[in-house]
Image (tube, rainbow, N blue to C red; front, side, top):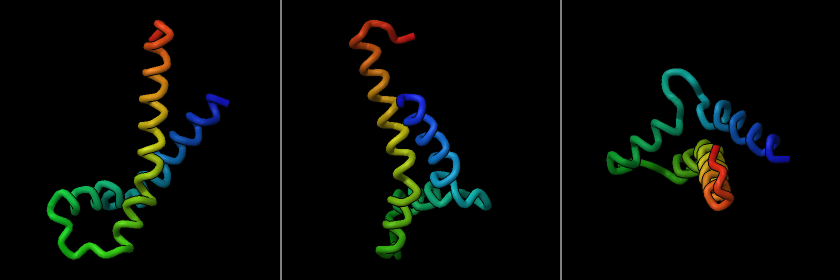
Amino acid sequence: MLKNKWAIAIVGTLTLGLAPFVPEPHFFGKVRWILGGGVGMQATDYFDLMFHGLPWIYLGYLIISTVIKNLKAGSFF
């Protein structure tokens, strides 16, 4: 089951999290837009950011929870 979680997170991040690939992924463009003030953003832009950002959040959650679990067990590597 653990490998399945990682596969879903990695495949989701590489496909949905980085789509469209050209000229730049939506996720990075939307984050740059928000950091620049988010002027002109509409509800669909925020939904798009959430849609393309969820795989990144899930991958980050898996990484952090695995690190914490391994640190508590005393076997990081």
